[in-house]
Image 1 (spheres, rainbow, N blue to C red):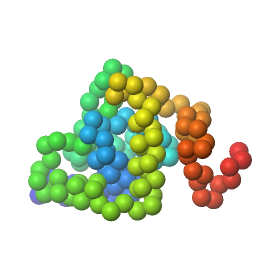
Image 2 (image 1 turned 60 degrees about the vertical axis):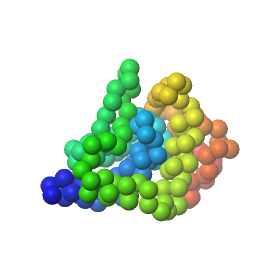
Image 3 (image 1 turned 180 degrees about the horizontal axis):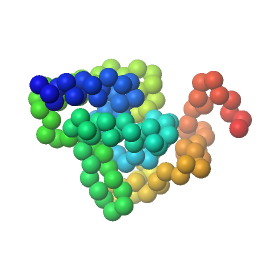
Length: 144
């Protein structure tokens, strides 16, 4: 029962739902920098949400060299797995659709299944992926 309560608490935040939906798309897991670029959120926010999901035993980590990959736990209790499956595989809204699209683009930059780009807070995602592949964000001009 406690695991179910903790799962609901962890999934009560819309950003954590977005993270779970992205992790459900990547069976091998994703590194923080890939999630940062897909969600277009600061690294510290993504890391904090991942910490909450990890504390709720929804997410696990694996290390590959210097990279830490976050993925869905394989040993989730059945009721919790059902909740996570509904969240991850649910009907995506416009925001989640764009998150998934950006994640797929970002994953194409991997070499041998590993992230090699990293995250540089000075360089934005728009500098890594050509502008023609990244749609302009609503409310912002294309001029910086």
